[in-house]
Length: 284
Ligand SMILES: NC(=O)c1ccc[n+]([C@@H]2O[C@H](COP(=O)([O-])OP(=O)(O)OC[C@H]3O[C@@H](n4cnc5c(N)ncnc54)[C@H](OP(=O)(O)O)[C@@H]3O)[C@@H](O)[C@H]2O)c1
Image (cartoon, rainbow, N blue to C red; front, side):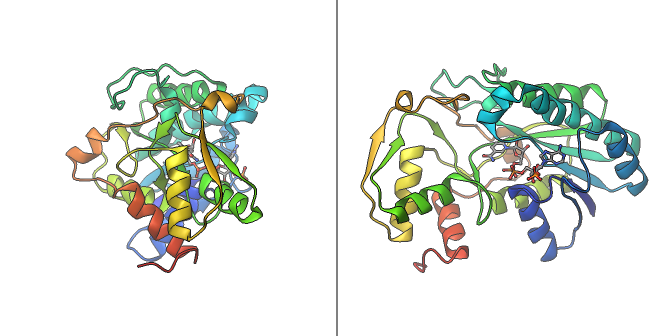
């Protein structure tokens, strides 16, 4: 398959490119400099003549705290931009896989959220991403929304890399222990996205590594696997007020993809593989 990828220099975009190098699919990557998804005519003029077999839309304004002050930009990229990409997919007649977020849920209940639960976004980032889902659906595109969570990879701005560098500085760490989600390795997610591209039944999908963890548990596992022993203590999220608070419970039930035989491995296994690939652990 020829798969066009937006946001190709992001964590998911890079993982898709990496995966395509070792598989049968040809990824046509569009970094933000090559295609600004908030530019409606650029999106149409770039994607429609290309006529790919599938588009994976991984571009987003993902700085969740900055979205609170950059509301125009958040909506331009995450809401309108997603609509423009969907309109191009509709014009081509190819499936669109658009990345979504667990932040669309308010996280107030204790059970995992499945694909049929109603979103209740609480931040600008979350509202703009939810607006993107709606905008895309209204184009009539052959749409698969794939909501995920807590993405990390060998490169990029992510929690694993932040924790490793903080631990190396040697300062005592205080990490939030009362917010939960599913750490999701970009490589595993990319594999799942490519599997969905092969059986593109339209709908909403939740796709994460399995299990669940608080930030504190995730940090602890990272340090254990990397052989680091920083002083680390659990703290409530209220100790770290942020412009955009993650949902208390951001755990996603992956029902729809599982029905198609697509499930991602446990998060601990994924984290271990990522740390091996980063050269941060040699424990096999
Ligand atoms: N990261 C997470 O924990 C997480 C969790 C749940 C869902 N998601 C969703 O998963 C998707 C991929 O996330 P990710 O972790 O790969 O994000 P990422 O690493 O931040 O990558 C996003 C990419 O989008 C690009 N981009 C930003 N504005 C753009 C624009 N106007 N036009 C074109 N490209 C633009 C960025 O390019 P520049 O770097 O040049 O700005 C960046 O390369 C996004 O839809 C995100 O909302 C992420």
